[in-house]
Amino acid sequence: MPGQLPEQPRVRTTEGVVQGRRRQRHAVFRGIPYAQPPVGALRFAAPAPPHRWEGTRQAVEFGPVVPLSLPIDVPPQGTDWLTLNVGTPDPGAAGLPVLVWIPVGGYVSAASSDPMYDPAALAEAGLVVVTINCRVGVEGFAFLDDAPPNRGFLDQIAALEWVQRNIAAFGGDPDLVTVAGQSAGAGSVAALLTMKPARGLFRRAIAHSVPGLHSTPALARQITAAFAERLGAAAPTAAALRDIDPWHLAAELTSFNFGLHAHRESWGRITETGTALCPVVDGEVLPETPWPALTGARASGTELLAGHTRDEFRLFSVMSGRRGTLTEEDASTALHLLAPQPHGAQAYRAAFPQAGPEELVETVYSDALFRMPTQKLAEANAAAGGTSYLFELRWTAPALGGTLGACHSLDVPLAFGTLDSPIAAQLIGDEPTPEAVALSHELHAAWVRFITTGDPDWAAYRPGQRLTRVLDTVPETLPYPEEVSRRIWEGHFPAPFDLP
Image (cartoon, rainbow, N blue to C red; front, side):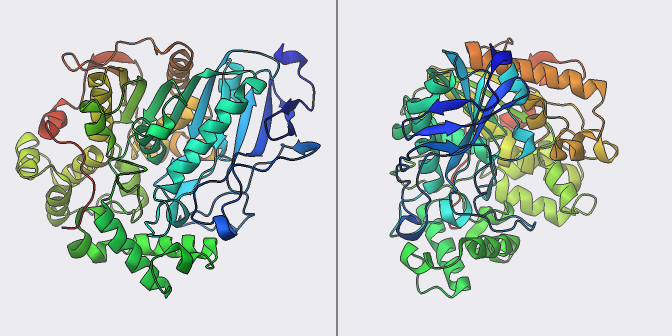
């Protein structure tokens, strides 16, 4: 029983014995390598299998954070980036359902140590929870002619392969794996649905706020060349970048991303995203984007729980200081670059005739970057023979006087049950309201049911009905609430960013 867990539980993996620790009513094992450190000759290479070790490896501390490209100071850490963590109700159990969480944001950050992803509540509900680190930014997604593309996805596949080899030793069932993520983590999940090497590595998928962020090789090559030139590198290659400190590359990418608008005429739509490096539809690692792959039956459907928030873009407009300053010129630019072509801009103005610039910008950004890619993934998965469940979070975050609305990322601490984590406090407040606690119980329980049985206990999304769970003070199942936007985007998949 979980209550009888030893203080220092041990598990034998295929690479060696790891020793974790008991924590509350579950056991945690941290910083377990699933691949070799991607440095030296392995930098910008596909992940290499981890080394075996003799004796017992201490697994009580998180592995080093991968180099992050964020406007915050994160001190450089070690280079053993490709590690994962396991939280389990009981390593001596058998057949427990497994959640693998991919904590990628903007394809520039991946920190499995974030308290928002604490596995305690999920583990105590009977799940084995795996959180992973993987390469992002330049290390994971720069398009280099002499290196495999989409290395961050290759890392995720290596982590899932580790799970297949080892999770039974932690009490989990390798045939009951659900892979999950939010934002770029959800984009990763969507990609894994279509990638041949990922087939058979998981049974179910959860994708919150799926982004429509992909690039063509032509655009990716030009962006990488410009970045290499900024660095003074001889060429946009792994050979030229390999000796540059990875944390310096990450910091330079942060500055590069801030200056994307200056390249609007040369690079087009991608300059509106703030993300220069994103997955490349290279024809090999990522053969095509998920939506046409699923709709065209080139990928099989699965059991999918997908969802987005009502006010996806609000977090970015508030945190950037743009909210309250958006102009008609901003609205025209957003509609021109992000609305579906050729008539999307006119369709938005006709569908929202009373909307001012602020509402138009927030609506088209929310739709183009998150809401429509998520809705279309649910629809495409159903078309491919899978079962899709869709939700929209409509509940307003109480922090900042409700200014944030039902914003991007609000759903994550609700699902994990980590309302006391620092990011949750910024969105919900230091003392969660009874409404927040009740809503967290609702989404958390839906996750547990879905991961365990494949059914979150609400109606499946089907193209004819489009039933959606709307999460608010009183949750209810309704027809898809963003139907006006869905009609504008009907017949349009999120297209990869390309040269104008």
